[in-house]
Amino acid sequence: MKRPTEPLRPTDAELSEIETVLGYRFRNPTLLRQAFTRRSYTNEFEAKYKRPAPVECNEVLETVGDAVLGAALLRLLSERHGKVTGRGYESDFGEGVFTEIKKNLCDKTALSRVIDGLALPDGTPFAALQTVNGGDRASGNYNAPSPKEDLFESILGAVALDCGFDFSLIVPFVERLDDPDRLTAKPKTEKDDKTRLKELCEAKRWTLDYPEIARTGPDHAPTYTVECRINGKLFGTGSGPGVKAATRAAATEALRKLETT
Image 1 (cartoon, one colour):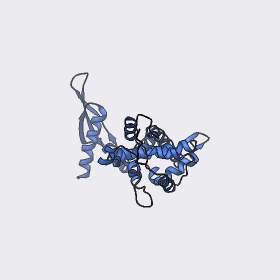
Image 2 (tube, one colour):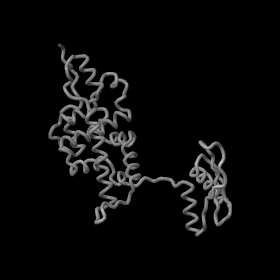
Image 3 (cartoon, rainbow, N blue to C red):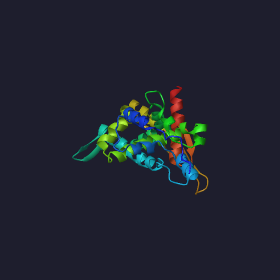
Image 4 (cartoon, helix red, strand yellow):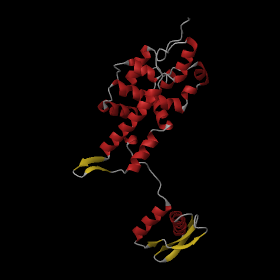
């Protein structure tokens, strides 16, 4: 049976250059080659030649890399924004902030942007070194955000497996690929109107109350109406399917009135 003539990418020389760019030397370079091999290639190879492809696709490495990235980021966050004391682990961030940081950093845009910044010395981008089938190569699909996200996770998964999940190596590796300060920064979230009004009233030493003044509609789906009173004076009224929604609406009206007077 005719054997394929097109060489696998990356070539051995390119693998060595990739290791230099990444700052990590593989004990088993086949893991790195696997990170660049997509399912489209292995499926096409096996259908055409009726035998296993010479290297596995990177899907399992993606799964490993995704989990390892989360663990590495949590380690960075726990070291930078907390400490273990006699009372246990104390952190500057709550659980919600940890979750939000991980979500923001592990999305397709963030990870594909990291891959966009990686290239060989001759300028060849990492994304172009992926082994894909002919259709993906012709369409350029390998350069879309999703495959680049997969590539990032696969490379990290390959490193993790190669080093035996040694986080003393994995964490510095993640830091080299991205800005540690960005990785561990608290997300900038815009305060809602209710919070802004509460902080304003506290600063001014004003009293702030939200009395419920009406409840209408059927028992299974009532509509609540709430007033916003500052120092006993009515500044806003809001309605909604729950007290919280009505309170937010009343706070928004009160805040707008204060900002325009």
